[in-house]
Amino acid sequence: MKHTKQQVDAARESFDAILHTPSYREIHGDDDHLEALIGLIDVGDKARLLDLGTGDGYVAFEMARRWPSRSIVGVDIANEAVARNNTKAAELGSSNAAFHAYEGVWLPLQNRDFDGVTCRYAFHHCPEPRVTVSEMSRVLKPHGIVVLSDPIPSPLDEEGFIDEFQRLKPDGHMRFHPQQVLIGMFDAEGFDLVDSFESSVRFPRTVDARYEALLEGTPDSVRDAYEIEIDGDRVMITVTVVNALYARRASG
Image 1 (cartoon, rainbow, N blue to C red):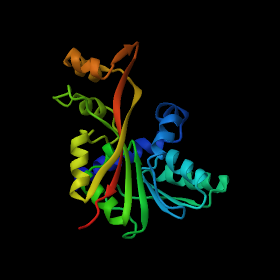
Image 2: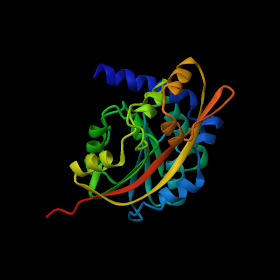
Image 3: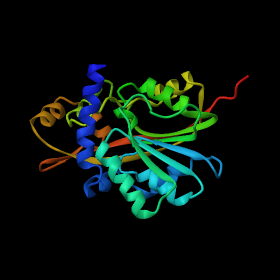
């Protein structure tokens, strides 16, 4: 677990510094994507929803605004970001939204307390992904759903380039999981994939010798798959995102 704690601490330090900055929102904010993602959520009017890896509350605040009769709880490892989210909720009068910090693996939440879980652009930071899925299952009611949005590696990327690329930034990146691996994790916890759509996210990194060395040894087919472009001291990369609705399998 020491390695896990180191990964979580690295991610916490990074995200506390950037989550509420305009540059982070510029890269990760996408209102069209948010609208489509929320469209996957099908729960009752009085439902309780958990936003796992809530970050700056991008998904949680929109759900709270849109559904005032639903209770929204956001959790994240970034303590300062969580505190700022709670301050923002008070300023906005979002009495149906609350935010809590957690240690990155086990959720400090009661069993069967939520009707749905959302998780956008955070699952690849989970140090124990199968435990995270198990924890989602634990806190959900029997009819609960999970809406997961996370990048996946290109099928052409057989050597794991994208994970090496992501780990050059010390933000606790663990792994982008192929879609079939994600389906398998949820299947093991009794969930079926019932709906999904693909999107993409494009983001920059500042080029240094490490990026140059990695890119120099990367086949053109893989570079093309991620639409890699270098402009001065910046490298731009695009990854496919799978947005999936998982529903608990009916017993019997």
